[in-house]
Length: 506
Image 1 (tube, rainbow, N blue to C red):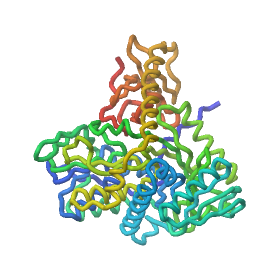
Image 2: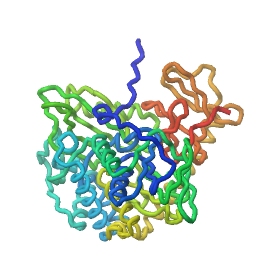
Image 3: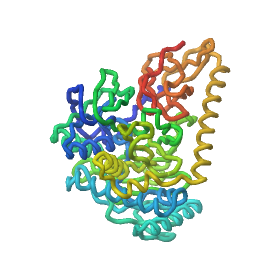
């Protein structure tokens, strides 16, 4: 039997967008924005319009991480997010969150204009197919009403445009879906129109704060600036201890071509069942549309088989859309604050010169723009009222308990990873193609993998806080189970709070 050919992940958006060319790197700027995703580029546009010299630094390419791998829903109907915020922070914070997302949505709409290649109007649905989902949907509906957001409720048997029965649903017309990388390309052009620069392939490794400004340390030299904005998904500096306040989550998505007799559903759909699913259509030409489906989240580095997760998603799509053929697949990583409330503003212990944003809980299209508005407003000393309310909301006892539980789980994976590594003797045979494993070499844990015929042996110790990495059999990467740092098979850093590659095997 011939082994199946490995198909690397590549988002539909990456396949259908032109690449953004990098600018040359200056040695000085008013504000350095680290990260060229939606948060970073929206912040850069707003600051450049304030007349500031802005420099955006991106370790890989524009949109390489979360924004380029999202499902691109620009929606105020967000699964069970509103009820989660209400439980943790109360109605006042929930209203501030919804107001922030509404302003973020309006800002993106204005930037995208009426270009159908970038943005398309859609009705959003949250739906349930299980009793657990019905309970979650009921709580979400009550939270949205308490937050002042109008929503339509649908009962059992409602026709919401999907080819399977639902037991309840929420409907919100007047929402939008995006081609996120085309949106980013427009933001890059706007940054440049105002004199800013966007530099790819420049990894930031640290920031030094002084009385008069910051020195941004990069792999290609230092840059002096007055302020720095960390728009990296999770902050890459540990001084704010955000790694202890967020939980990473990774989820899979794929695009499918349907038989001609099967229609792609018209809306945008997210379930609140224990096994969450996401659906939307994606125009890819004249009178042609692909189905984009997403699966539930998992903590990177803690999943036994990501490949099995992908197979489950394929099977679910095939069950409800017979004859669907997967065109491409990808994965995105996001972070949830233990408070359930996103953070955007000055970083603690940053001397008032470092700003950051994180914790979008998989709803980055609206939250990224809201974070940009909050940060740019704070820098101009004109922060939105809702931003102050979100940033100063008091954590609850529940939040404290969740933080303790999350960090206890991290500690468990730290100890467990080292224990397993110490007990893992090296097998006689090397890993097969596509396989990875952690073995002991003396007292050192070693990450071994074989990809495209090349055998790689690296230190299995994550360069962030010393967790033992785990092999991701679908993406063929090394993922840290502590805080979500990820590395290629040859050890090159991809994302997360780490700022250095995996080292050589000891």
